[in-house]
Length: 266
Image 1 (cartoon, one colour):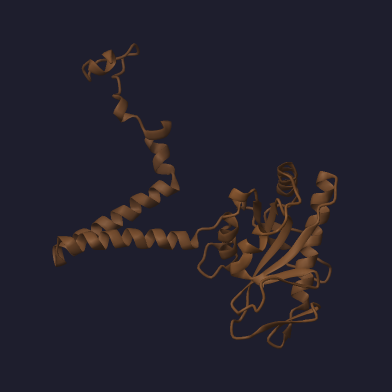
Image 2: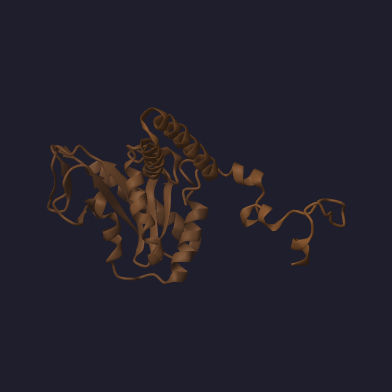
């Protein structure tokens, strides 16, 4: 209290003027560090644009319209940013189907699930696989390699005896083979890292056409509608302990590199 009651011009032992407590940057960061934060910079730009547009509208149409326009500009930019945000830079666009699955899986973290996105695995000799698992999910119910697919919504999806998957007239055998290959590679690599077998269930989340079932296993690959990705995992029985999940997750991070090296994808 004695320090706060002294005059602002009073100097400390080093001969420097003392700074009032309310002049300290929040959270111990300098103002330069705060301005270097991309989120803070975005908010500064967002508010500045809204203020300028609001002032112009206020002059032309009146104060109430100006304020309303400024608020709507801020809201619109927040919504746009939320829709295009992703931990994988290659998915930060409105057409990225992988981003939709990513957002669903994020909601499972509170249930003990860990997720890696866009992880690289060895490609097959025939070149069927692109060497990427879109979403590797590790949780109490096991380990899953989920690939997100955008198909033409005008063509129906059907199966034949749980052995064939068709999208309209097109046989999707190669797509199922790719999913199975990628999951098998992840299983071998992670298992070699932890020293015990780690089964990885291949899965395909389809967006676009209507899927006439909840989950169908076709050629050992789970197939379901993309908007069911979270439900696909939530209701399965628990087979891994928290220690198992942490160990497998750590091994996956170390042994399956990001497909896009500039991304953390975690």
